[in-house]
Amino acid sequence: MIKTNLIEYIKTQLRQGATKHSVTSTMIAGGWDAKEIEAAFAEASQDFKLMESSESFTLVTEGTGKYYFWRSVKVFLLLVVIVLCFLFYLGGA
Image 1 (cartoon, rainbow, N blue to C red):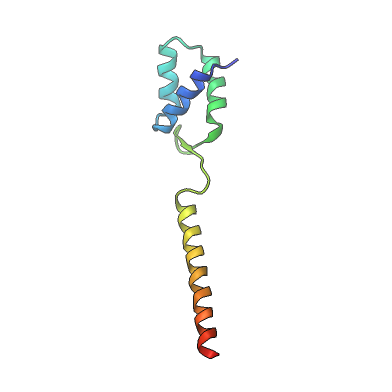
Image 2 (spheres, rainbow, N blue to C red; image 1 turned 90 degrees about the vertical axis):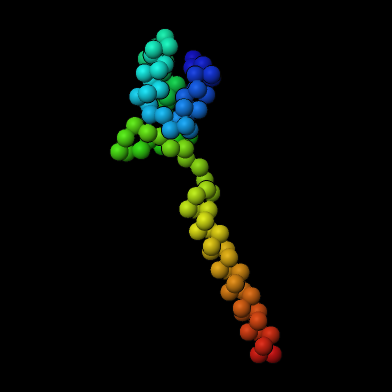
């Protein structure tokens, strides 16, 4: 069974931008078993995505960054169109 503190340590390191290699090296130097480290990485990295060009991980989140920005812009534009339609309707009546 994988220890929870080991998984949390890996998640913390990945959030701080550490590479899998650097975390693994540190943990092996600290006396952890390589098989246990791999199992913990498999568990801990479910919330992360391995970057294709390196061993770096990024946290996968929904509703943040560019996605959130463009969604906000779309909502704002929709509201502007609704207000303009309402103003044209009142002006024509």
